[in-house]
Image (cartoon, rainbow, N blue to C red; front, top):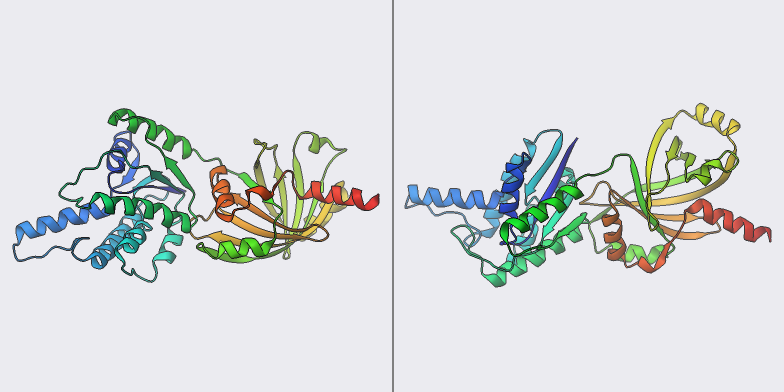
Length: 359
């Protein structure tokens, strides 16, 4: 399976040097399309004095159309597996369009969602900036573009990793940035990373309207956890059967690797109803509960789900599940719900509520 990682930041952030070094080390990269097009247009002008080149400083709308189309061509030819590092991607033109006050093609957000990017590495700007034959932006414009890029990727709900400036020396700085990027691309497989919050849905829905998120459906679940004399609980293991809109799913989870998050290995198996019912007859049930779950997905991150949960007698909750703890924290900040984080899961809350009711 291909994993596409975006390297972005304003002009002068050090993207080109970093990506060239990644290429030297054997990684697949996609070069910056905009610089290629500018160089090609300049070559055309030299070959034909009557030709007027298409540049961001002469016709930004047409130039960005060329950038988007070329980017699509490159990404359609990528290998079907492995890690790919891209110097900018389909979302970058949105920032340039916003700064330049132009409109882009109507299907761009759909194309971004279909591109299925894994993560974004946002490079902090270097303390120096030099114009060249392809980079003609003023420092003031560079700063606006740089800030605008983060705003766009944030609004689209991407998993953004900030890459700082480590050292003023070029080589040392590139080395440390590469170490960070490669470390953050070592993603785990079959893992559940999530955090829960006890907060009113109306508050969260109002904030979600400010971001590019899509409603992906509502689940009506019955969850039953099983245990053998408390042995699984003691070792932090979970064995669960979930009935969801007519489907039956057997789930096994390992112990959490984090105190602040649920960070567990998770394996899910779709099973026939007859098998599910048979297992439920012989397995010792520990706790059972139902919930209604309204699900939303950021346009820029197919691995992230923001769920608005309602549990009878317990009320409203929000769960953020993503491919990294970084993304969970980003959405926690975006939604402003860090103060509402809770420890433990729904089974613990259900058992606690039952204990209070018995008293």
